[in-house]
Amino acid sequence: MDITLLAYFVAAAEAPDFTHAAQSLGVSRDALSASMKRVEAELGYALFDRAAKSTTLTEIGVAFLDDARLELAQAAGRGGQAGGGAGGSGGGKAKANKGKGRAPAVKGQPKLGKKRQSR
Image 1 (cartoon, rainbow, N blue to C red):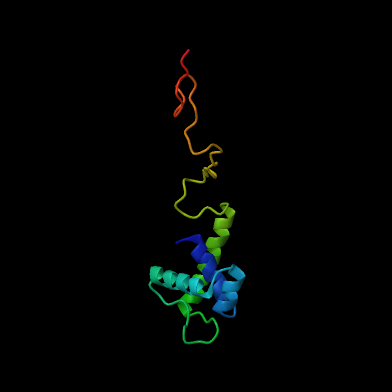
Image 2 (image 1 turned 90 degrees about the vertical axis):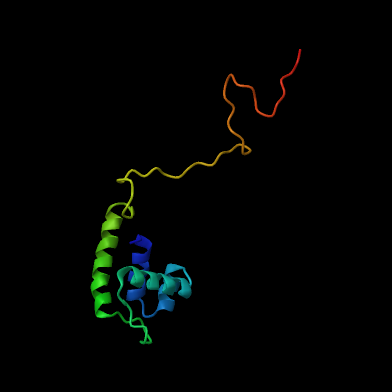
């Protein structure tokens, strides 16, 4: 499961309601609600009691909260690498080309787009 979804679940479970959780995460309430429905669909169980006015976890939700906290702690120990990575060998961010969108010139090759001067 995506580590972001786990973080969203933990924040939603610990907050008094989805609105407060969404504000603390910096996402919209609808985005948080959709993420929680996605988590529930992946697990196949209802984690929240949707009839309650405040955020109320089901029994399965309480059990999953402990597992989610453990998984987040392990991910933080791994340096934030979510499962399915390349064994911890992060490649880093690709650098932007400072040119004008052209391939770099190769020494000994004629320049692209330029005509050779005649003598």
